[in-house]
Length: 159
Image 1 (cartoon, rainbow, N blue to C red):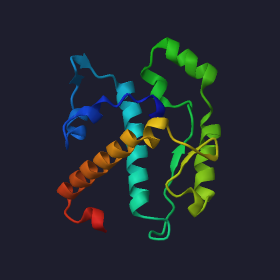
Image 2: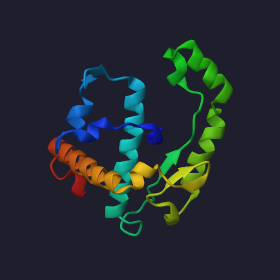
Image 3: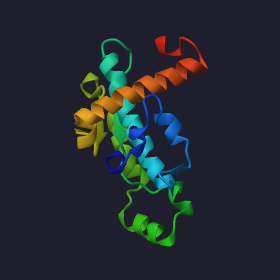
Image 4: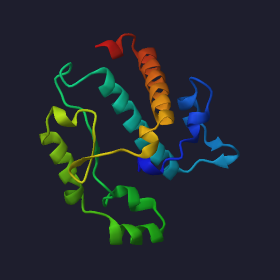
């Protein structure tokens, strides 16, 4: 899903990405939940990559990776239009098939730290994530989210 995120919120002023994400209307258009879902997946990729750049596998006692189980049958479809339910029926994986990548990720070692796993293998994330612009936005997301977490509990991100 992160491949499809338009992420217009990145155009917000410095320190304003998450504030922009809270807006229900952007550029005169109501924001759809599906676009927010895509952006949430992109934010996850950006944040985890930033985290893993700062905390290597030998610095922390766990391997942190990004897992894409693919399009699976789930309760997300319960409120979708009929055409999307048909699409899911035809193309979505069973949850058991989707879970295989999660199990695979859990069995891997440090070679997957900070990596994006899809179809039970290390896969490159979207070109945007790997671009210079993506790297800049990754740092902005890191800085803003760490600031929010520190605002909730001072020292939280230092533990």
